[in-house]
Length: 101
Image 1 (cartoon, rainbow, N blue to C red):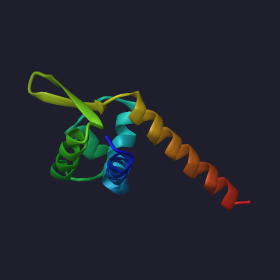
Image 2: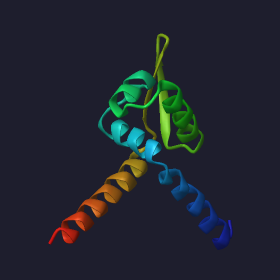
Image 3: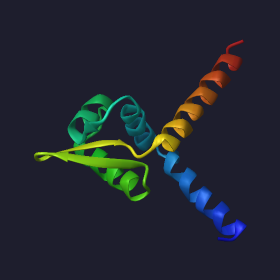
Image 4: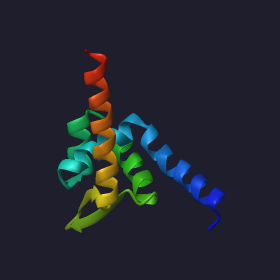
């Protein structure tokens, strides 16, 4: 893969994080594996909207699923995603501290 292609892929990857609802879903999934309904309740968004965003997150390999009976549980796909989100949150929180000085 050429360097330009890699940068383009990275750009597309970071676009996934540009949606507030997706980030709120990922924040819930950082804490625990959970179902669409539980995520919807926790972030106060319709189950349909959560399901749509989870489908997108799954297609971009940020989340994975596990089925138990008829319930599908979602979780963060791997530790790389957790680290990116946690570092992003840490960076923002640090910036907020600096702004409050």
